[in-house]
Amino acid sequence: MEAMIIDLPTLLSNPAVKSTAIGGVIGYASGYALKKVGRIILLSLGSLLMILQYLQWEGVITINYRALESFLSSLLSRAAELQDVILGASNLLGFGFASGFALGLYKG
Image (cartoon, rainbow, N blue to C red; front, side):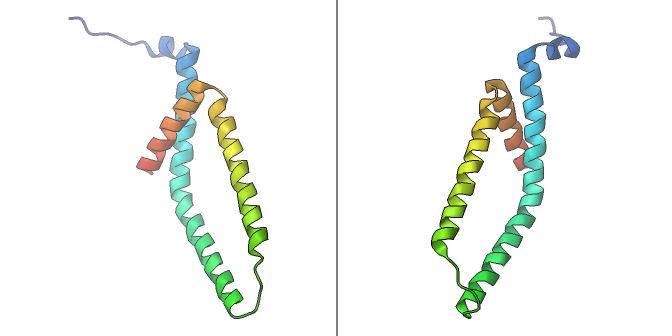
């Protein structure tokens, strides 16, 4: 049985392979960065929410929970639309991005 030799420039000249590879690299970088920066963001957000809840408990401020819920639901819907745009750009780009993102989250 003869070993198969893969020529990288020839392989990358295929548009499907190139699209998947680009999506994978971008996804990996995004996942890695999200894991590293995400911890700091979540810690900051949690601390901010605890401070706001304490200030409300003391009567310093009043939180309009209906407005907060409306704001957060619109923010989440915009994030879902962005996800659809990224993953819907190209099936191969989306597959590469999703795979790279998962690997970046795991390795980060």
